[in-house]
Figure (cartoon, rainbow, N blue to C red):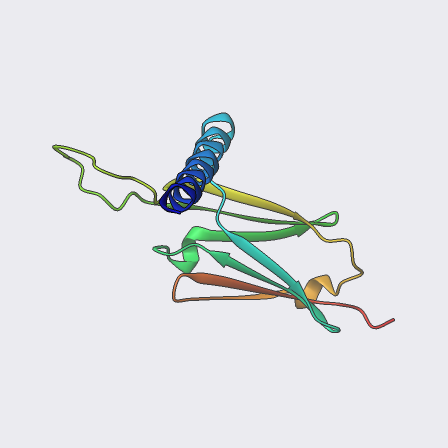
Length: 129
C-alpha cells in the first residue's frame, strides 16, 4: 500500500517539475513570463482574471487590437540585490505579456479593468445579438 502512495507523490513531483521546466523554457525562449490567467464568459461579458501580485497599476498595460487583448507589464524582483544562497525561486519577475484571442463581437470602447489584491480583472462587454 505504501508503494502506491509513494508512486503517486513521485508522479505529482514529476508533473510539478515538468510544469516548472516548461515555464522556465517559455521565459527563456521569449524573454517574458506568463501570469496565471482565468477567462470566463457570462451572457453579457468576458471576464479575465490575471494573477500579477506585487505591481502598481501604472506598471500594467492593456491594449485591444484586431481581435486580441494584450496585457503586459514589468514586475521588479522581490529579493535583495546581494544574496548569499538562493534556496528556492518560483516568483517570476521582469517583463510579462499575455496575448488573448477574443472571438466574440465586443464593445471595445467599454472595456474596463481593475487591479486589487494582486489580481487584475478585465471586463469586456459583449454586443447584444
